[in-house]
Amino acid sequence: MSYEKEAFFKICHDAKPAKSSYVSLYANQPYFGGPEEGGWWGHDTVLVAYYECVNDGEAQAVLAMVHGEAARMSRDAKDDFNRACAAECEWLEARGLDDDFLPEVNGEESYWATIENQPGEHVSEGSRRYE
Image (cartoon, rainbow, N blue to C red; front, side, top):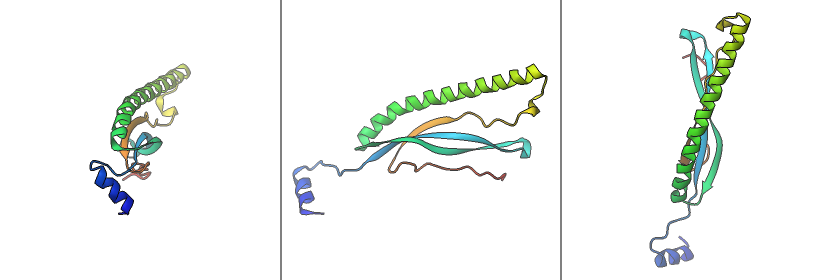
């Protein structure tokens, strides 16, 4: 530790080292994988946005606010998905077609937030093979 840092920590006993934290917003994006076993689905987890916080205390406060927004975004995504499904059903009925006419749906997105040391730690891609 440098002389300056040592002197600072000697004077300021409760000082905490500078360390950024990130509040990250993620989306789980579902996909239809294939028709095996009656159909199977997976999901990718993508980083939507992140916010750099100067310490864990700020990150906790920001996360509390983002959790509410993520829940609202998930509800909105579910409502949008349900409306799209209803519109597709009405379209099929108007034409006398059965539900095999359209491809399988992927499902609605969902959103969630977390605190990370680096943005994107939870990004993942689901398997595109039936297992």
